[in-house]
Image 1 (spheres, rainbow, N blue to C red):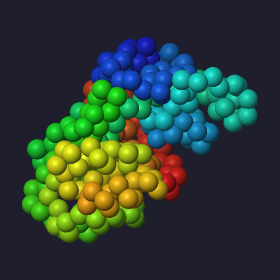
Image 2 (image 1 turned 45 degrees about the horizontal axis):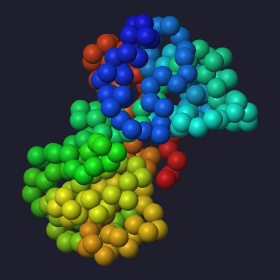
Image 3 (image 1 turned 135 degrees about the vertical axis):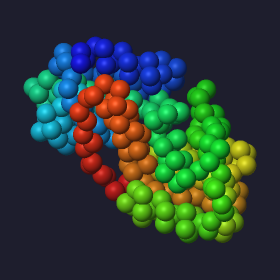
Length: 250
C-alpha cells in the first residue's frame, strides 16, 4: 500500500484535525514510500524504533510521538532516535488525544468494552471533545471484583482507592494521566472511575467526593487503542501488523 494513501486514511479516520492537542498528530517522520507491515508502540523511543526495525516495519504508529509543539534540537537521544528511523527508512505516525477519544478504536471505548460495560456513552469535556466514555455494568459487582477483572485483562496490579460504594454499577473511563477529571466524573453520575495514572492531589479529590478510583497504569491503559487500530488496518487493508510491548511499569 502506498504510504501517502495510508496516512491520508489515518488522518481522516482518526479525525486528527478536530482535536486541540499539544502533540503534533499525524506523520512526524517520513519513511518508505510503500507499506506492507506496520508496527505499533505506546511511546516513540529508541527501544521502539529498534524493535520496529527488527520487525521489518515500514511505518511505526505511536500514541506518544516525538514532537509536542516545541523546538527540539537534533542532539543527544533525540538525534539518535531520528537517525535510527531515517537509516531504517521507517516512518513515524503519532496519534495522541484522537486515539484516546475515538469512538471505534479509541483507548477509552476499548477499556469500556474490556470490562463489559453496556450503554456506553461519552461524558465530560476536554478541549472541546468528550473527556472519556462510560457506562453501566450488566449487573452490579464488588469493587474488588471489578479491579480483579481489569488486572487479569491488562496484566497489571491496579491501585484501588475505595472511597465510594463497595458494590458498583456505573463506571467512567479515561486512559492515561486523567486524574484531574475526577470532578467531571462525579458530575456525570458515576460511582467508579477507571483510569491510568494518579497524582498526589487527586487522592484527596477522590476521597472528598466519595468516588472509587481504579488506577491501572498509564502505559497499560493506552495499549488497547493501538491494538484495536492494528486490527482495523489488518481487516481493511490486509496489512501485516505487530505490537511492540515496551512497558514502563508506570
